[in-house]
Image 1 (cartoon, rainbow, N blue to C red):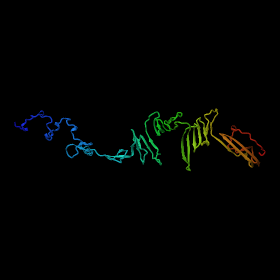
Image 2 (image 1 turned 120 degrees about the vertical axis):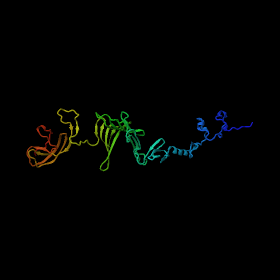
Image 3 (image 1 turned 30 degrees about the vertical axis):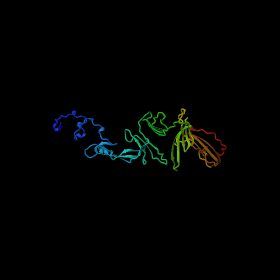
Image 4 (image 1 turned 90 degrees about the vertical axis):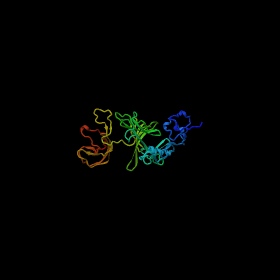
Length: 399
């Protein structure tokens, strides 16, 4: 029988169902362009294996002009797509180099590589060839000028290792001794500064400087020089100055641990000492009272009821020139072969010694002869007569 062809016009609508078509019988060439839309594709029906192979380091994007199929885009093409699509911009890092810390700048899309701030080998290094007195400043809550500041002053010398440390800290009270800020060298406390709300204190070579009680006084501040360990060790404070000739002079005060005493030295020589048993020694020089009427006060000693003063305020030694006179009218024409006198004054008591020899006398003057020229004016009045020794007159015929 001859084959009869049936056109699409001869097929009823919906006469051919999918059950009438064997599996895999319709190929891509049998489908018209755009004949299958997204509604005809089941969810998850197309997986990644159905996509064309991509080169390494590529992503899918549309990089060609106009609408069209997705393409494998390079990194440079992706950056261009992001710039256009999402507003991303390129950032420039100025002055960049190995290990430099990156900081912001006042210019948009620009960063700076800091040559004076580097991080390498687990070390953060801050340096400034012009000014490094406040390199690191850590600030907590509060004003911007408070907090912890750490730095070094400018290093000098051939080794460039002698710059002094700069440290400034403000801290809350943390223990019974208050806030403490410590400076250490090679792990050893060298300087401690503290404040406990009532007093400020500073310790050199002492981690907990604290004052001893002094009577009923409240200590407002305290400086302590410590000796952590060892034997026969002491502590000192040295003061220096230059005189009018630019000569350097020095005074050193300190505790001599080997002798258990307080010393004051001038230009390397001991001048004054206070022993641990309270004895006081003036090693070199004199004890001088610069104000008249001042001296040694013995008021702590016991006294009798008639006591009027316990102040030893004067001592004096000297010489005087004795001579003979008469009480009614002065003598004249008296000649001496020699005459001398010495005296010692202790408080208000004066003791005198004298020796003289009269060789001739003209006979002028009248009255009772007496010894004159005493270094002090004697008291007068019957109730104030002083005592006297026994003078020796080898010859009184001339009187």
